Length: 324
Ligand code: UDP
Ligand code: MG
Image 1 (cartoon, rainbow, N blue to C red):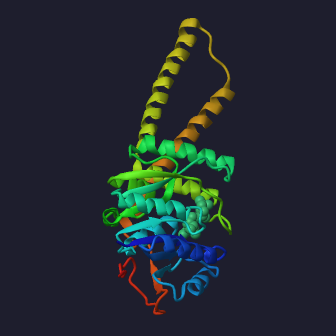
Image 2 (spheres, rainbow, N blue to C red):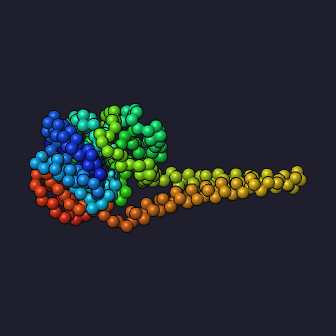
Image 3 (cartoon, rainbow, N blue to C red):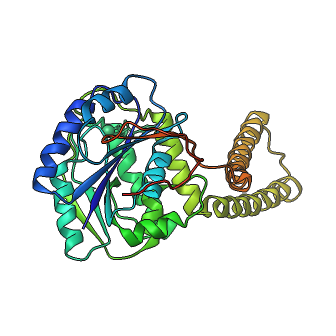
């Protein structure tokens, strides 16, 4: 029985030492954690050298280094692809996903669950706006996607070998990891945990990136926004026919012409805006299709470094050279 940790790291120099010593402590209690796969997502600070210094001589650390920043979701995807363990726990480098909860996940997996995900209990250490948008986003996602996605759950989770095998068969160019794992099914269970603040450094997810992750999630699991355009378009057309009838009746039956070009201009602006908005939605889906058909490799691995031996070699993009 062999468990791996999959940890995406991007410019996390400030947390590396604490992270590695926390993991070493954790492995005392859970010796089945034989491998730690750190995916360096194109860090430009001293993350890689810090990692090498902190883990040289320790057992089972592997650093997969991307050729540039491909994003958190891609880093997780690469980690899963490379992992050959019986189970893997996906967690952040900044220890916001507590190792104590990871331990509980291993216990649940031993009881026979394939997916054990962390459910964030009420958070007080994140800005109210972020908390509120996240809260409603998870609920919206679940409603429109029709996927039984757990609420208030990020990517922190344990997945079994068969979930990893199934995940590796998904060819999505822009994977939304938490949605895809929920979509895969299998025996899933949640564990509630208090999400602490980062141990050091700053978030690598500014609002713009959070928003694009959210849009990626929605558009990869639902075509409801497109249907909304159809329904709204129908409603507005129907309403304007009624309006036209009313205008004609006032003019020819009642005999008074309705005046006022200002309201007319704003109505035109309003509907112009709606049209552009929905054109944008259609464009978003077209762009997704475009990304999919290009079939580029999803990430490029520059090299892989192992804590036990210092040989690093160039590997093919997406090649599964892992042997653990
Ligand atoms: N991360 C990554 N690539 C990125 C952005 C983030 O690999 O482009 C990693 C980051 O190093 C961390 C995890 O993803 O381990 C979550 O990022 P962060 O803690 O900044 O997000 P937050 O917890 O603030 O949502
Ligand atoms: Mg974090």
